[in-house]
Length: 327
Image (cartoon, rainbow, N blue to C red):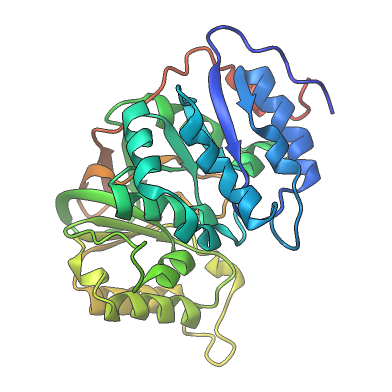
């Protein structure tokens, strides 16, 4: 692996966490020099090397990634998850979520991740009202050929105020405004009934998942419905569920369209599909826990995100992030 480039004075400090599954060595070998050469000053990268059972370290080690931040007088501009998998939920009772959330809001740092990491993001939102960002993790920068859409969306997402996202395709006509929140459906449903799931009324809920058959997706949606979560929302946005690879073995006609139809029936709110987010290469980056408004006109829906922190990413070298082989 190439030695990381020396950061310039204008570099963005990027603090890395490993709160869930083991970060594959190949991803580290590609992502770390790629991010360094692009102009990020990497911090806590050694945490990505940890291995314990199926986790990136013991619970105490993984807990320390976030708790250590409380001792830093000046927080990094960016805090990014290494990968998803499983493990973040085990940390929630021991995290000082109130203090972490207060420091996150005070510093206006950007906490970024998705998948299993959204357990921490949702818990921070529930316990302190602190927002974060649904966006790429280290693994997304560690592919052999990084996705250009995802890279450009990441830079635009962290640096552009009041950014808009257009989702083309047939959609129900509606408009509204609320807190944009959500994440991985499996994680959200596992937090239902706990103090770590935010109680958002009139929100814009987004959901994604991977590796689940249609009936399992519906079962988790039914759980959120029975817990009273879905009916409180103003609208629901569905990202990628990898449904092209999963069919109901008992009824191949029960597919994602059937799940969406049932979701619309039980929730009673507009449900939009095609949000470019989830366990896919071409993902966008979105504020989570901040206000947003939407307007749908039949042939598409426009999301505008409001009042979230940003960073100056003008010094970041996007070509270095897209290089197939880090220098």
